Amino acid sequence: MEKSQLTSSISDMFVDAGIEAGEIEISPIYGGSNNKVVSVQTQAGKFLVKIYYRHPSDKRNRLAAEYSFLSYALNIGLNCIPKPIFCSHKNNMGLYEFIEGRKLASIELTRQHVMTAARFIRELNTRPNRDETLPTASEGCFNIKQHFLIIDNRLNQLLGLPVESELEKQVHSFVGEIENTWRKLKEEISAGKHSIFEELRADDRCISPSDFGFHNALLKNTGGICFIDFEYAGWDDPAKMVADFFLQPAVPVSLEHFDSFISEALDYSENKAELAKRANLLFPVFKIKWCCLMLNEFLPDAAKRRQFANPNTDPEQSRRLQFDKTQHFFLSKKA
Image (cartoon, rainbow, N blue to C red):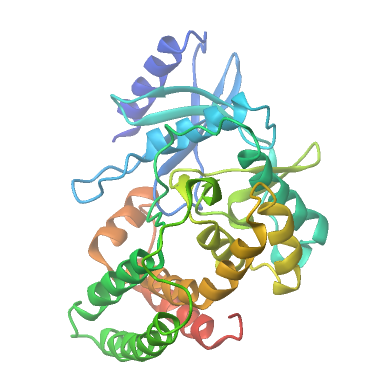
């Protein structure tokens, strides 16, 4: 979308939202890897607009997932999120409160920050009437077998990529190593006492941001944490939510907080002790999945999303960097 066309579409959205914006000034915000994000200065103040990635192969309605999640959080009184203001399904755009703040570095994280995140999860889930109309989270699964199948599929995708360049050969060999580890782990869990086919009870499922972690949080200029980016949000397995929080590689969270995070975040369920065991059991499973996610850079559709979000990205440099990061992550003791 050209800048003039984007400006026109955003101006129309302000009109539809009943906001007298006047002349608007748009500035791109880079850093995301899926969508275009801009700040919009108007006579009514500063706003954030997100233009969501859309492609025939990507069936997820990212706008609907994020807007419905934020609307639910706002309706139950949470103030640690940006307020949703308006959405245009025609143009696949969302209009949100602009949060003045900055990203946190891993070295800055304290127990207080981690417990703030845990309370956010608990508060999303302790209301008597959780919103059953929210979608299932991206790759949300409610039995262990489903988690296995998603990882199998991701590994097969990676193993099926062309092997021509030297980098592609290295990646293919590395994915083979991951697959060997995965096969052994799958056999070990399948032979254990937990049925891989047993469905997680509805009361034990959680409303989750899904891609949850401090990579999707801002330290507000006024103080406090604001959580952002909910395009993958919805109903999920709490074991996946916990693992994602600690395994996301962008702003790593120390495992010293693992037990206290679980104790607070999963306090919505009377079955908290069993959910904690499930989170520990499946943690290494999700480490394998994160290895696959980190190698998304090599998949054609993911590469298109990266270019959509930031046309200035150097694809080859991004692939090499991501491969190096994934190797380090796979060999780390975080599991």
